[in-house]
Image 1 (tube, rainbow, N blue to C red):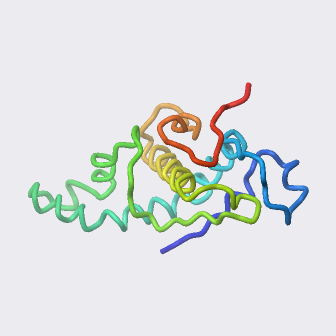
Image 2: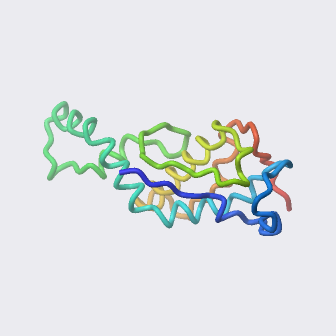
Length: 155
């Protein structure tokens, strides 16, 4: 199942949204998107986790066979926790697409992939309670290379 979520609606800098039909020409700052990324992760968490579970199912069943386990002893959730290292960037099929929105067309494909990866990591960390604290997009920002998003966080 695919879900399209629109990041543009969650931008922090509302003053830029006064001109709804104008494409942004200046830089997009990560701090403007930080809260929106987290809100999107929370808003669509159940669907995202469901998609992750569906997309790891084949590997999960192979792991069950190799380790001579059954689904009662080792759940798909256990498999996700054991195999996905959320502390580093990873790639997984998830069925989530971000809508660029008119104003955020200047964000590169690489940066959209980074944002999607961060949303996935926040969902997994939060859903499976892997950390003692809330996962913030800012925790991950320096682990990626950014093309069109500026990552200097203002004071």
